Image (cartoon, rainbow, N blue to C red; front, side, top):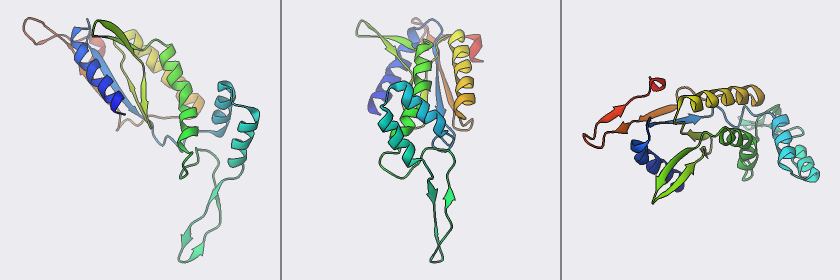
Length: 190
């Protein structure tokens, strides 16, 4: 996580030299573990190249998962899960990572990376993810439209949603080297 914060700070600092500044979007997936479909998880595992034995073993864990509660010293009837990534075990994060990986790959394949200069080198900053949060830095209007299109496809295919109340956008403008004041606000930010 520390690396992601360092990358973000470096990117915002360098944005003052970009012609249009930049926008940093922080997206939070709504019910990230609960909304995923098992079909999506297994298809992703197959596409990545997991062995059939491993996929079969994972499917076995998802065969008829249920939860029961202890209520007034009585165990309730089982409540079956029909979708979502099973939680409360040390391995639950791994299926989630597999389920979000196609989105991260699609965003990076859409060339939404921001390029910043650091110590005379150009560095590409890809989409960054930490748990259910995704950080994207589109630097031009076309990138924003590509982002929107890719997210809509992901919503439809994976049954995903991003929380509007937890989504944040930060605009970092280009600054004048003479006055130190913001020079330009691209129309797509407004």
